[in-house]
Length: 122
Image (cartoon, rainbow, N blue to C red; front, side):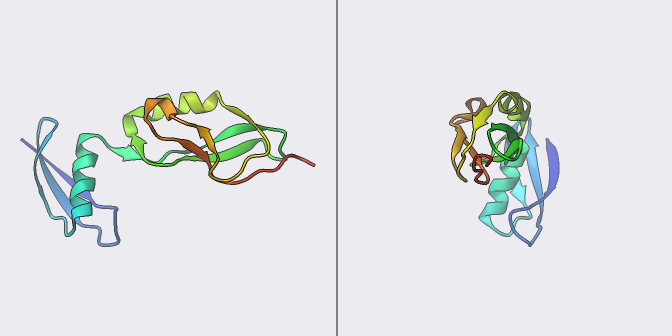
């Protein structure tokens, strides 16, 4: 058995959570003051998830790149694959905030969306 210690980032409490693991299975979670902390700590120990922010090339806008973000968290171990897919993207202006750039990023089921609008260059 292995005990992992984490500090929860779900709220300002910053609970120190101890997760007892048997291989990749969670046996016990202690130290969280809310259910969100328990879910966070167990997910972090089994398969960490993160929001991915990046940029994609935009054609015909005043700027060369468009900031993008995943709509939800994706597995941390999928970041390299996701970034390889993002690097290949070229999009034409105009783009609206929250416009879907990639529907199913790297097979995660999560959309990559524009995090700002961009008009064509004048």
